[in-house]
Length: 322
Ligand code: 8YV
Image (spheres, rainbow, N blue to C red):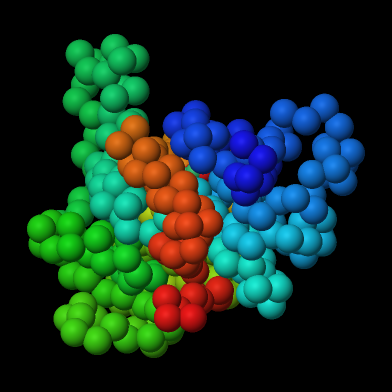
């Protein structure tokens, strides 16, 4: 179909997305081009939409190659690898996939918290190693009487907080602003919160605003019972400082679904048996990844139907009346 808008994909996207896009658009797949430079030179000027996974860098250099680009549709709620401000300056809309993954990621965050506190993966390994008949597994830490500090009380943070209410723990939060109508204890600084809690749940967006903000001082403030859970972006935590805090007993343990250099995990973290490590699976159920894929596609369809984007990011706002 020569009248269908041209869409570019850069890396592998899940098959249901590619199929849905194929039915509606003219697809250009950089991941299948033998010579990427020649391919981009040839099709770049035709491209009006870009569909990307959340780990793909989309910056001014790429925008230069795509002079007629109108919209970037991102697979994921986080879009820290997309220069959305630059997109906004060029009049390009960026969309993400909020809401459809909040409950899934919150479920995983609670699972990871419980797994870390009660050492569920380690206990499983203990049983499989045939050690149960020898002696019972050593007693673990507890979630009882804990104070949980949520860094970033956005959509996912609030879904986590709702779940935590059922676990009968104190709930604190820190973010740029106090949320109206929220009864949890607000802290104006991360340091202030770290001193007041013994679990730090990281759910903030990645990018320059949060880069390395969980540093050695914050970890020290959590104290020796401290537990760090990260389901957001590895960049938010100074990973070397975290590994050292875990090694030295400055904090008790950590559960991590995200890392600084994915898919590579630092040997310092891998060497620690009391840390639970997951390969970025927060939104990774069939149900939720399908919903994310649908929203990625629906944003492009709505845009090219002239209805405006469904879920634009705040850096590239879009008012329906415009
Ligand atoms: C990824 C995520 O999108 O939504 C996000 O920000 O990090 C994940 O849901 C997923 O790993 C697919 O790339």
